[in-house]
Length: 242
Image (cartoon, rainbow, N blue to C red):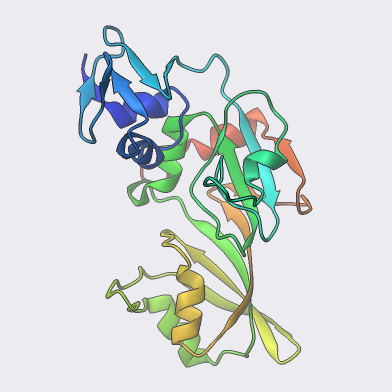
């Protein structure tokens, strides 16, 4: 049966469907010897599909890893040519190919989920499944109630996009600034920092503490661990699946 290539690649462990689309766009995928195009379909049972010249196959074992990404580490598997910065893949010593689910900015820190389960990755990153992420955010200034209310209702960014409503609450003071906690369902690049800037609340630090039902817990920067079977089961229970 023919399916979209990004779905086949995702199921084979190459990341979320969105990440697999990027692989296709980069010209790294071939179907029966021909460079694949975005939107293309194939039959995994009949067609010869390869990525970077290697035939794809479904992963024998699914791997699920929770990592505490430190600041100044890329949330990618491999950096661009001539880019010597560390990636999250450099920090996790497992032999299987695994990929980060979604992104966490270079200068942000906290929980990153890495796996070769493309279907779970797709569910956790696609807004329609209703999974949320939670962040502790340190602001350089103390926010007032009006600023927090505006943030929670949604803010129009410089590109014209209005952010979805979020849960935003004051947590504690910290010197001249304050810690706030944000729960959100979307995650555009540098969204939290841009909103803070627009509201006159410069962001000093961002720590992601939760993805769906998975918690950062006591993991310290650079530490990682395998998820328990119970944690994986809970992650797969999408709030909007039924």
